[in-house]
Length: 241
Image (tube, rainbow, N blue to C red; front, side, top):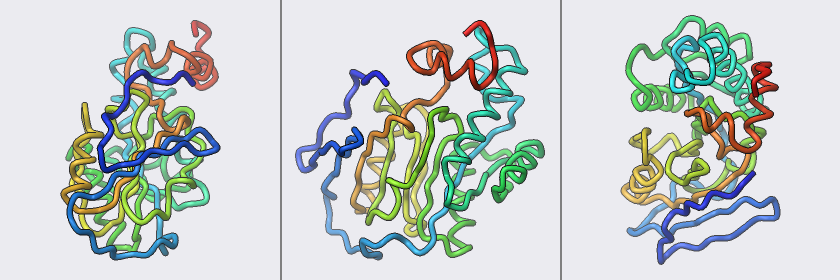
């Protein structure tokens, strides 16, 4: 995948390292004393949480390139890929649509019903319900990641892991402990807001760039640029791509 020219501004107290797989991790020092509530061993209970909106309402910003049925087909295909990438972890889908709930169940995911509350509230409710089920760590992933392969490299760290989009502005995946409560703030520029939330909580933070999780699909350019062009054709069978 092409490297983005955008970079998160380095923090003086942080360090950055590239892994053998090409992933880049920024580990930031916390700015106030931190008393860990868990050790460095993998958590006892980890689950993936995927918020999915109604397929009929998904990806309307792609209307210039795709018709309603194609957008729905694309949304379904990407969501199925993300659920598959979560294996062998358990998956819960938070939603407020009967069709999405049936889709999630058919793919082996649990369903958390959260009607008409918006993305941030839905994720907050989903994490709270998982905490009540004694899940200790949750991987919150967007459903529109067409290259998703695995979340294995992200789990079991002693703090919070944020995986940005390829523009280094959004938050495609976040791995957080279920306690203390994390204040979610999705939308444009969410990476910096989520980073600030980590600092507010006093938790160690790593920002990990993962090529297979950095490409999300929001606007027509996301379909037509680079590797997404051929993948989109594969997902929806649209000859124009």
